Image (cartoon, rainbow over all chains, first blue to last red):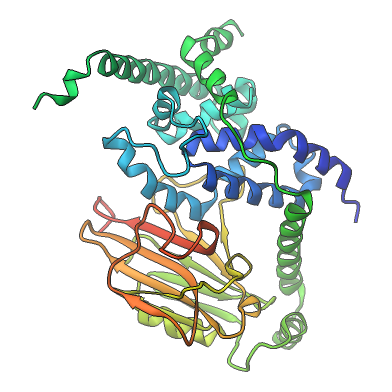
Length: 171
Length: 233
């Protein structure tokens, strides 16, 4: 009933990869991300009339995927080991998700990560990012700035550890 | 504007972008798979809207029976509220379970309330029951409700909403909900489908980092929640 199948098909074809990459990079688990993104696209189809008029439909999909309640609970369990060890979450091997910079991304607080996903991965401008997250543009800038600082520190730490392997073996 | 650009020109963000483009992604699922899933969402939503707009319990019951066909007489539309969960019987024959992560789950109450709503389930405390092979169709029976986009997701006290469709339950199968109170103070619940006549139970909680042994990610739901903290226990 007025459901624009062609429009959705085009959107799906063009947006699946970038949305999946953004969600997988944020969660560290490709298998889980695949399921979350498929669910989000299904919901986008079901509400296509609304989503097609959304200012940033890809952001809608990514946020829906990342907000997937059940997955969030499961993911939380997956993220716990990452806080203490440099162990990649299951489903990341061979996908390129276990690079230092993406591991560092996943250590950021959830809000900073969301800002990175929307602003950097989906290339939304500050104002649209702010609207998506229902926060002020200034807050987006602040999160982004903190995220950059945190990433810089994490990467510097990773470099130091790599450069001095003895550091990890001395007890 | 220059502010924005300066920030996104940070080398770390460049590196992130470059790395992201190198992430290998599996092939797209078929469009039909997505639209079929989307259709199920629309049906559910339309049924819910229809259920709300139909005045009177009798009309509601007729609608529920018309949509689901074979539900037993024990099904009565309504809502059961306990401290740890809320169970709502929907007019389309499904039931929506919302878990309150701040409270300890009452497995016995959940078992009897699911039964009251026509959902065959085995809710166990301190053990988890599974079948090998696992019955198919979990994703048709159980779906999860994320927060709607654009709404605030609470930082704490997040509630998980699960919709269960008893009409989609394969013959001879039932839901297994294994509930554990972990030494850390957290609660773990794993939900799968089991064969009613052939299943085994173990007192070891499934590994929270992946699906229970013998099940795929898409055949199970694992919850880890609550735990030590100001409002945790």
